[in-house]
Amino acid sequence: MYLYETAAVSAAALWALTGILAAGPSQHLGAIAFNRMRMVIVFVMLGSFVAFTGTWRTLSADMLLPLLMSGFIGIFLGDTALFLTMNRLGPRRTAMLFSLNAPFSVVLGWIILGEALSAKMLLGIAITLAGVVLSIAFGKRKSQLHVWETIKGPLWVGVLLGLAAAMSQSVGSLVARPIMETGVDPVAASAVRIGVAALGLTLLMQLPFPRFKAQNPATLPIAMQVALTGILGMGIGMTLILFALSGGKVGVISTLSATTPALQLPLLWLRTGEIPAAGAWIGAILVICGSALIFAV
Image (cartoon, rainbow, N blue to C red; front, side, top):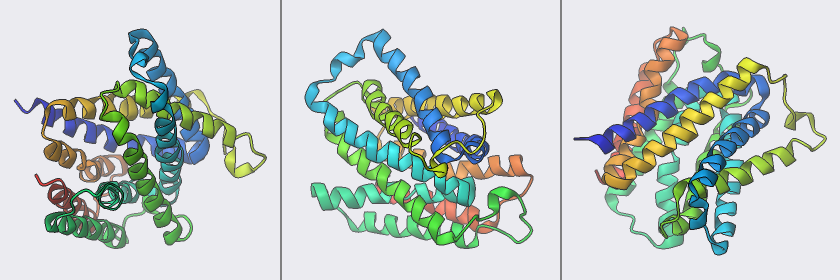
């Protein structure tokens, strides 16, 4: 009973945890170097699994271009923008901004695919947006001094990067959706998407610009933390959500997987010793309520 729902909540909890685990290594290496290392590790893991199980046979030549485009937009651009946001705004604000990928996906589906956009969905989008704005504008007390609550650089730059991350994720998913509906093995498809992101990030780091290089050496403890974020978030987390979607109701599973910002707050409390502000809690709850309306739970 509630096996699929438990899997969805577990995935959301893992994403909440990896958001916190990634903050240190991303700051140490820089967003691009961190993301490159993470993508390479996950690609090796998924590629080995696909090669061992033979599920690569479910891929056909006509699927490659959409999957490559999806990986470039959703992971290469999206994840890079995500960790650039984290380095500027911290994990809490980043998780809230990234939660906008659900409303973006609904609106893009309406504009591009002609999918229905009901009054309930519009209300859900408005509530989700209100939760994100509330969390960013009123989610910190003056007494909170932890570095993760410090905004580095102009706030609007971090917000734009977060919005770009959410939009890129939505566009990447939209491009991949027709391919995923054919019954292709999701792990094989993920390996292609992550592979092109790893290649793009590797090429980007070869350019003669300091901001594209690692900001500090990749020590063994840092590399192990990076690997852990990849295994937990993209390995186990994505496997759990795919399992949940295979047997659970899509609306319920999608809403439960959107609880990441709320689940992250107690973890931040434990990690920093600072109780999140009321605005952060209320904003996270509004995101969950808005997601429930969007996905018509």
